[in-house]
Structures are given as structure tokens and as C-alpha cells.
Amino acid sequence: MDTSKLFRLDGRVALVTGGSRNIGKWIAAGFIAQGAKVYISSRKADACAATAAELGPNCIALPHDVSTVAGCRALAADFATHEPALDILVNNAGAAWAAPFEDFPESGWDKVMDLNLKSPFFLTQALHALLKASARAEQPAKVINITSIDGQRLNPWDTYSYHASKSALIYLTRRMAARLITDHINVTSIAPGAFPSDMNKAARDHGEGVAKRIPSRRIGVPEDMAAAAIYLASAAGNYVVGHTITVDGGVVNASLGPGIDA
Image (cartoon, rainbow, N blue to C red; front, side, top):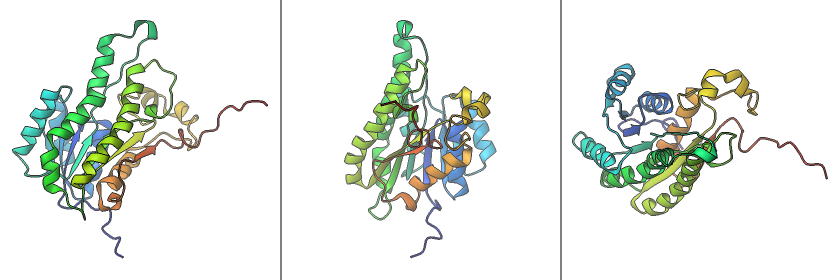
């Protein structure tokens, strides 16, 4: 048994949506460090190009807005002009919306559900042929959905569509996995907890306070997210199908409740 290259991604081609910043950028950087060529996509072309320049020649900007089915198909068509096959797809692009229950708008519901739930399905569908072109029984292609611990437990904020979208995406991951494993494509997900990002401003701006409520007593760092993604994308994760890896310092699975007196 040789495990020396188990986590390497040499010769592999990846596409990361929402790849210009935060979690998507950290995953892209991790893949590149393991030898992959990574295409990053986001709706802001300038940000996408700047991140690609920062991450080096093995990072290619491919800006598209995947919030619509048409946008998903446009990205897939553009990618197909660059590569004959796709080894790894990371569905990371996402949005959140908070508003009181009494005032929560339809626009906030639709924006979040479309980008967080609808787009991962239809982008994977649009890239299905390219994923199949890479997939083999001994080396499956990989689809990694970025979900959230908010799909596994409640937070105190009025983020109704975000909660719904992420819990649905965790279950959709399982359903897609059941279908796509027949094509030697493994579908999994990563559920991040508190990481300092533009979406999680509490962890970004008040990390010490947030850390006190986490069993590990710290917020996540980029290496935590990159490590989980590398594991699933590499040969190390070839026998993992349909599973959601929770990367949250123990919030979901190692937190003790307040207790109830008998």
C-alpha cells in the first residue's frame, strides 16, 4: 500500500464556482498546491481575474453568473471550449438573505433558493458529459457541493431561505449521488461552520467572541476548508459517496445543550 500520493491532484482539472474569494478561493488554492489546474468562476470578472493572477498560472478565470439556468449552461459551454473533460466540480457559489419573518420578501427567497439549490443541480447537469468523460471506476470524477451547518441545525438569525436551501442541498447531494455514481461520478458535500468570510461577518469581524461558542474554541481557517475539499477531490476520497463532511469545530456534533432538569 502506497499512500504517499493519496492526496495529490496532479493532472486533474477542477472548476470552482464562487472561486474569487473566501471559501471558493481557499479551495482553489488548496487544489493548485496539490497539482491541479483550477478554473475559477464568479459573476465579477475583475475579482475573478485578480484572484487567478494571485494564485498563479494554474488558475484560470472563467467569469459567469450561475444564478440562472442559462448562466449555468453558458459557463459549461465556455468551459468546454477550454477542456475536453472535467475531473472536479465544486458548487460553491451562494447567497444569504436575512429579514424578519413578517417582512421576508419573495425576492430574498428566490435569490437564495435559485443560487444555493437550483444552480448546483443545473450546473452539474450541464457539465455531466464532461464529468463522464473523465470518470473511471478506479478514479471517479467528483462533484462537491458546499452546504452549511445551517442545513443541519438552526442559527438565531432570520435567514429562512438560507436554512431551507442548505438543508435541501444536503439531501439533494444524496439524491444526485445515487444517480451519478452509476457514471462513476462521486457527489458529496462539505458543511462549513464559522469561517471568516463576507457571508459570515460575525466570524470575520468578531472571531474571538464567536470562538467562545465553538467546542474547538476557534473559528475555521482556510486550511481547514482546503483540507476537506482536497480529501474528497483526491484518491483519498474515492470511496466516499453522498456524504456531508461537517467542518465546524464541533458545533453540530460535539455541542452540549443547556440540559433539562428531570
